[in-house]
Amino acid sequence: MPAERLSVVVTRRLPEPVETRMKELFDVELSEDDKPMSREALVDAMQRADVIVPTVTDTIDQILLSRAGDRLKLIANYGAGVDHIDVHTARQRGILVSNTPGVVTEDTADMTMALLLAVTRRIPEGLAVMQAGRWDGWAPTAFLGGRISGRRLGILGMGRIGQAVARRAKAFGMQIHYHNRRRLRPEVEQELEATYWESLDQMVSRMDVVSINCPHTPSTFHLMNARRLKLMKPDAVIVNTSRGEVIDENALTRMLRAGEIAGAGLDVFEHRHEINPRLRELKNVVLLPHMGSATVEGRLEMGEKVIINIKTFADGHRPPDLVVPAML
Figure 1 (cartoon, one colour):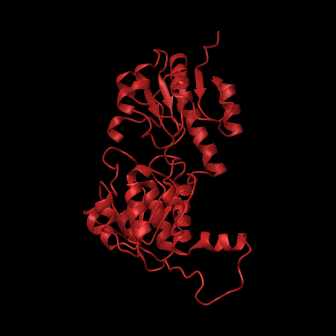
Figure 2 (cartoon, rainbow, N blue to C red; figure 1 turned 90 degrees about the vertical axis):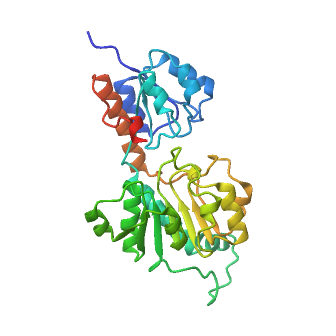
Figure 3 (tube, helix red, strand yellow; figure 1 turned 90 degrees about the horizontal axis):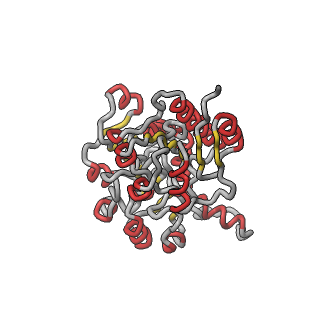
């Protein structure tokens, strides 16, 4: 007699091939409208499923976990970041948490460079003029941006994505600097031609571009606060493709408006999709709707990792991408 299939609830629409494979393997309940679940709907799912597959739009905190049913044994997150999940409380309740690391490294690094170029070369301003039909021909002083070759890039967070950004920036002729919880091995530093800064303050004050590539944790919340943002050079640019909470968005907005920072390229925001309206008005800011991982290939690979994590768990083994509190 075949074993009973795991009950799996998916909170958002996933790529069609991923959903099809899940139907083949599990007793799966898919999202029909692709809207974020309400908290009550999440609780309901957590009370009747063996596994839930949330995304970054689902906040699974201590209160929700306290209402989870005894049946729930795995939260198989669709995404690498797990700052929206209270991993400590989940583990205390015997619920495992898995994620999808490494899948979007190259995609996010590509987007970091795209934002860096978009801000420094004023691409959105040129695009707006062309789309409005207001371009009246080339002029020697029109849309003057800055050359990125030779500029100092300070990378905050030198994990997989930070190193992928460094490789790309090095190819563009940028000077690579970084701050990280742990210094890289000498051979990695040598390969990337990267200079380590133990002091984040000292690094930030000397960079032409600062790229945020660290996860959101209690220790990185507002790591780029008002005091640290004021250390940046007036002609410097900041780019964030990691998590919005790492930057004090209100302080950044004030400084951009005052011309104390030259520009910003942001793919993530402190309050998710509720963006400071004053930030949206600025010409020296490029805003994107969390597109860093938005490639067909990346989203399919994320789904494959989720399926492998659930299938491995269903077979009685530890999910390969298990998240433990010590990792956070």
